[in-house]
Image (cartoon, rainbow, N blue to C red; front, top):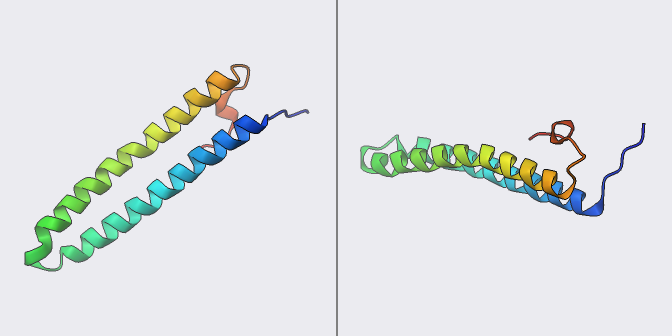
Length: 87
């Protein structure tokens, strides 16, 4: 079996993987901080807004994956994006 991956494709894969990791870390931090803010009535509204922001970031993740698939398909239409690692 022979696998050919161009340097552009590797850069693109790395970029989208990094974006996905950063997004996941932000989701975790936002939900963690929001959870702590729920311990006090004075900060509950801020905690609620952090939960909303975390939920929006959860929607960003599939957008990153979809954009990555489209980008890879454009640079190499012969390559099936399903064979690549999804994150």
